[in-house]
Image (cartoon, rainbow, N blue to C red):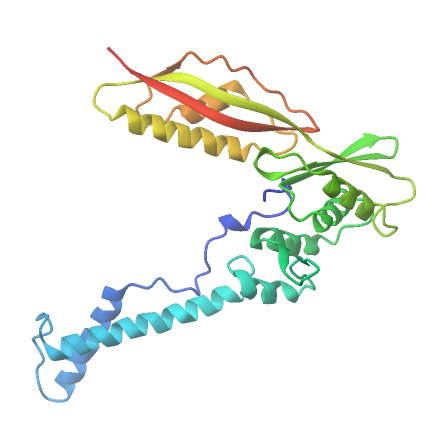
Length: 296
């Protein structure tokens, strides 16, 4: 899920807090051995065989160092479980419950789970609660639409002028928003506490403009051309994934620059043209077909 809302922070970019220790077995073992040597000296005998892997005391200290590392790792995991940005599964459920947010779970008539909201969607709804959106605001419509259809890949709210509000929905992986999602969101946005009387709200599925990249990479002699092509394909796909949201544009130069990974001299045979941004359209990369030629 990748709801494109620049005002909500991207928690995936948050570093782990300093309270979470960086653990290293060798560092822990070295500290224990140094402490042992110090205590042995204070007790009146010299311990100087710590470098011998067969020394029973060294073996015992290795076992205890490993257990200590496991215990300290458990403390780290316990801290992560309390932080919404790092908690997973049921730990995340408890972390976000403090803000009155709960995971959306849908059951069939036999009580079997047919839909369970993903961690990313749940976390995003949790973050949205801090903005306290007012009725009729872009954030207000977005939060209500996301709650009605948590499977959305992107939702865009557009001011159509003269009291008109246009809401566009986008499914994941190049799949258009289904009709039941459009109806569910339209119903949710029609609620009195969401839509002011003066707003005329229209909900529809965003159009998807599919494109592909084909070309020939010219590479120098020496590097494995197959690896260069694989790296270029991976880079272009990452670019396409990042641009798959409503209203995105695909400049030709930006797309080609993604293919210019190390050892690509130039790209030939590309017939791609700029794809301008459109308010109700999402560009979707369907494939990357790159061949190679070695520079003579």
